[in-house]
Amino acid sequence: MCSAQPDSETMHAAIEMALRAPSVHNSQPWRWRIAGPTVELYADPDRHLAATDPQQRGLVLSCGAALHHCTVAMAMLGWQAAVDYLPKPDDPDHLATVRFTPRAASRTDFELSAAVLHRQSDRRRYSSWRVPSGYIRTLATRASAHGAVVRHVPAGLRPHLARPARAAVDQHAADRAYQRELAAWSGRHGTSDGVPAENSPLPDPGDEIPVRGFSEPALPDRTRHPDAAEWLVICTPADDRKSRVRAGEAISATLLTATDLGLSSCLQTEPLGLPELRDDIRTHVLYDCAYPQAMMRVGWVPTCAAPLPQTPRRPLAEVLDQ
Image 1: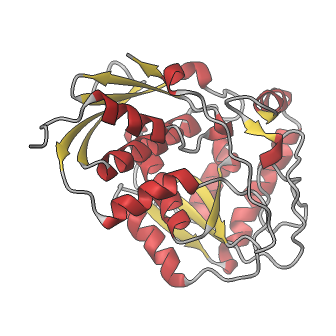
Image 2: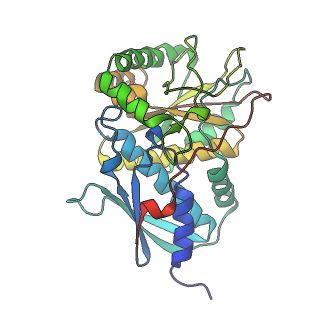
């Protein structure tokens, strides 16, 4: 007979898979706690990147992505999650408490769980192969289950996304605090956090929409043919802390679905950390109908592209409070 609650070994395994979630500058700003039959997720303010992410948007999105990774892993292990968001109003860092009930794993559960292990942020240029429109619809459907919307940015609207992206690059180039923080969290070798040099290509000034550059880029990117990547904006109808947690879940669902479909992907949030540029995207790309939480690039890597090195993660013991 199946136990009515998962054992600690099962919850440990799920949390360990959750550590594969993407996070701003790979800062991994989360802490976990197993409290009897529940799993609790906390933001870790000690890992807040003040210059990059002044309003903690990226921090909360990162935690939301880890939360979804955890529930995906538990579903594969036979447990349905019920999430209580922000259960303690006097403790804003306590983002979620998760309870579980037995449920047989579905094929989708196994597919998304496998994608957790294979997903990587690929910051290189993509190939000229087009992404089928049906794939974009599938990504949007998966995100909608988490209270967020995926908006495809067609070619005609991309200049409205490119303008604030370029402005963010220019502002950050002149921001000494941002540059110091970027240097502290990227260009690393052999550490358990931060963005490794081996995973960062040199930004291409010819890109239609610029992406964030990191210190000491060392990832070869020899693709020079047209890049047929599609751009998406993950947005929410509200903009409170719960909405950002749920947006993080939607980001995870979108990334894992893209991976399962064989697509490469990369998050881009640089202009969204600057309020005036975020408002620009809200007005000119989303027509003031929703709040942008993240931008995402999806496409196909060239067949000649080398496999990416595995991005490091902190060990479970560093993030789990017993």
